[in-house]
Length: 95
Image 1 (tube, rainbow, N blue to C red):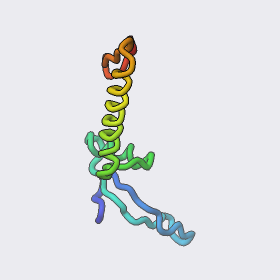
Image 2: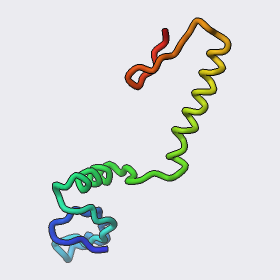
Image 3: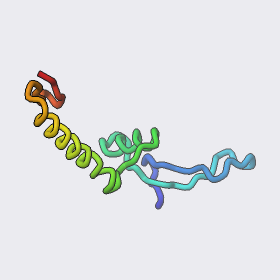
């Protein structure tokens, strides 16, 4: 995988030898041309070592959490009628 002149890329330095003025590096991932939205977003993710994509397991985790939360709310609602949970602007508020 090789980067073209002017492209942003993620590289791993292979040799910092004192004989050469420039380090030798291996291109890990070509991000694209500077200024493009996708390129800049992937550059930020790479800089902070964040993943570009997520595993199937990590995508299912929020769903499992919501299912567990719904079960808990239903159990709570059945035992105590004086509390109600309302969803306002993405946040739960107790009344």
